Amino acid sequence: MNLEEKVLEIMCEVFDQDEITTDASQKNCERWDSLLHLTLASELEDAFEIELEPEEIAEMTDFQRVIAMLQSKL
Figure 1 (spheres, rainbow, N blue to C red):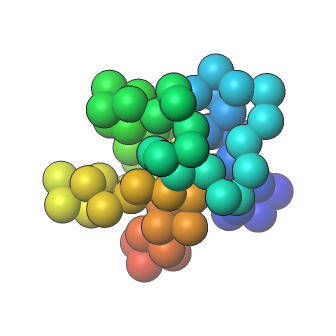
Figure 2: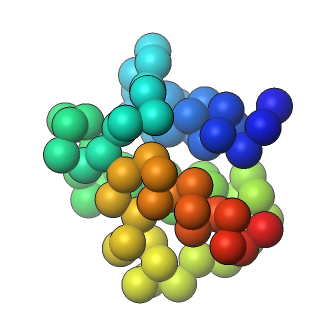
């Protein structure tokens, strides 16, 4: 499983969705609220064994930015 597939899997779990696409963002995913945003960050930290700074978490507003942030950490 590659990075994108793993992130999509985590996002599906966090947002309780059957499917999430790579164009997912806070604007088009109605369940992506502030609480689930923090849950997503926590799940990503656990899954990839990284630590995200508050500023980094705040910047992760869509799937592509999540991927970019993870790539910079891995």
